[in-house]
Image (cartoon, rainbow, N blue to C red; front, side, top):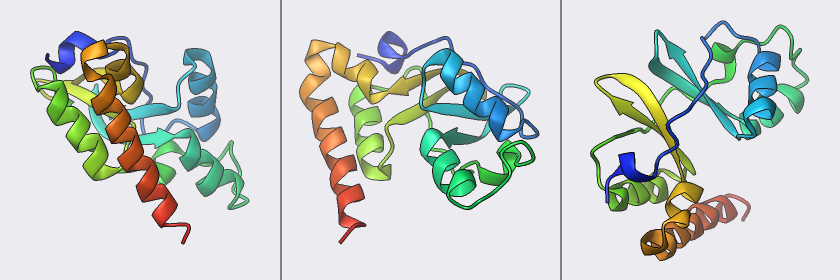
Length: 143
């Protein structure tokens, strides 16, 4: 099965000059935990709800004046629409991420979340394994 078969194809994004408040409002509107940061629909970075909490709120930064480019993760791991979902699950596990932007011809066309794979019965175990690997990586940093 290919990424295009299970990805979420409707994805909102913001530009690098968007405020963190705008990003958070978009997360609320879309009921998602991450927003890609793009320039002309080309992914430059990604911001998660965790990024906002740790890098803005906990750091005492001003949400209205902090820009997306100031806190976005720049080394974004992505997948293409024609990649196999098994490869995507391996990438999630390897890089300890729960969501991957989906790129086609250099442009953002969707998001593949770990939950998207879990919905497909054939990939439930693999999604669970990837989530387990991601969670173990997070727990290791606590020790």
